[in-house]
Length: 313
Image 1: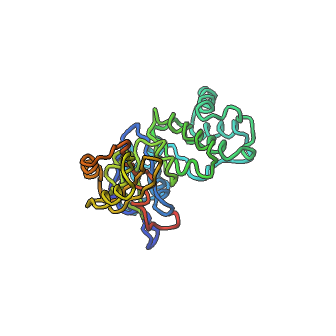
Image 2 (image 1 turned 180 degrees about the vertical axis):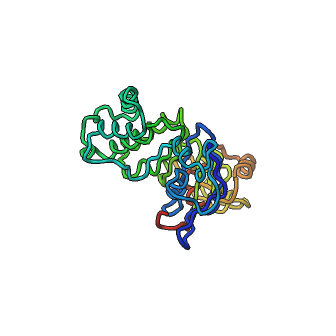
Image 3 (image 1 turned 90 degrees about the vertical axis):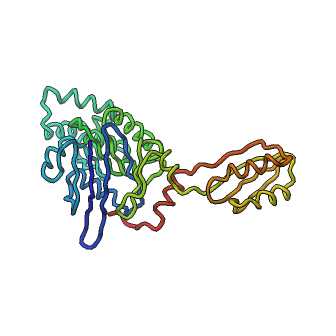
């Protein structure tokens, strides 16, 4: 569906995007995740034809965004971070106007507006002035705008920025519903958004891709730092800490007691489970609980983007 090869974009001496290569298949919800200044917005602006790349190619459904820009843009719906709404217009009038600009016939227009009002959850505000709407509803109107021409691809730049938790959940639900039929690409620096919504997460930092895959794949590929939690019965705190601390891969041990039980947290490099389990199996202690903590998206994000820029490119 979308093929990005060696994409670069410079602003003078500043390299905002540095040789990004991605293949995005049809029907995928992909999150472009990164700190402010990573190059997320620039990448999306080049993808949607609003900016020309300095180098590299983007092919959208067989159309090169440089040589066949109009053909590529007709199958892309784009919602920038600041929705291009006319605040002095009524929602219905505004969307009707956009429909006319997009060459949707009068016979089809009413049905399309009803469909979008239902999909984007704006039926109750169609008669209201845009200026009177909350930011959450303005974002929904923006989604309706981006979806007006029934594009194959929907590109959203920070769609939940500035929204409250309830509004974020609502926008997330709409994106997932749209993603059942469309290819969706959206940028965010909100980790929970990518984790909850995306089939695939691409993390970029300083203009380059530093990770690409599902959450499971990112967790498996990230540098693992052991964090093993276990509960023992029948062991003294001193004996347990001394014994487990002596194991080669264990770097430190935290311990707390609950009556006859000990709760321990072990830290070290790599997977500690086999070494620790074999040691406990030889002891007279009873193992009541034993689990390896999984790296969260936040852990992976910090690991991959530590030292990023501070201003959005």
